[in-house]
Picture 1 (tube, rainbow over the protein chains, first blue to last red):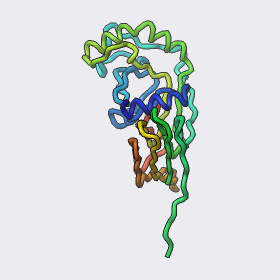
Picture 2 (cartoon, helix red, strand yellow):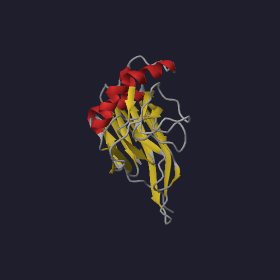
Picture 3 (tube, rainbow over the protein chains, first blue to last red):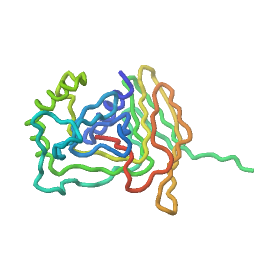
Picture 4 (tube, chains in turn orange, green):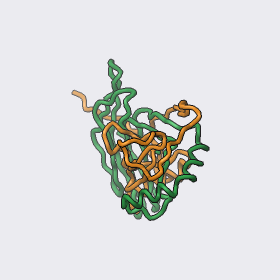
Length: 105
Length: 133
């Protein structure tokens, strides 16, 4: 199994409600991160966006035939929270922070 | 320095975040689900027109939430050997101007692969990476 599949599968088992772990989370285009409403696919651990269902159809992106925008009752539909810094480990993995040693003198 | 050990044969994984990631989730999960069911055939036909090599419509993802991380280290232990280990060093320094400087100085993994990014200066409230979907 490839590294990106092991990464997704093992973290998915350990953290089943936290979604799909991307091996390569860098956006394809700098400054254009993944957004809620993006439709796409994942290849080799990287997300590829095709279009965003919350956007009206325009000439700036290719869309399926008979494309329809998803219009929600409220534009304020995003809940923001945070994912704490730290080490998220699958089963069988242990992490040990070690104090850095600096030679003196 | 962070040391990691893996014991097992099926493979293991670590996602390490030196600073908090910003999480976004839609509250309209039901509307997204219904929309996907209604439109999935058209979306799949679209991927076929684009010749993306997609074989099953289950490969299509509609993002209803994501985590935006400013820096990350991913490790995959490939399994197949009884024990594996590795280490890496990342330092996050918050400066007076509220920017955070991330320094990744070294990393190695035996029996696995390590991937990290970005390093250098990252600014608050500017999203550089999406870690999870």
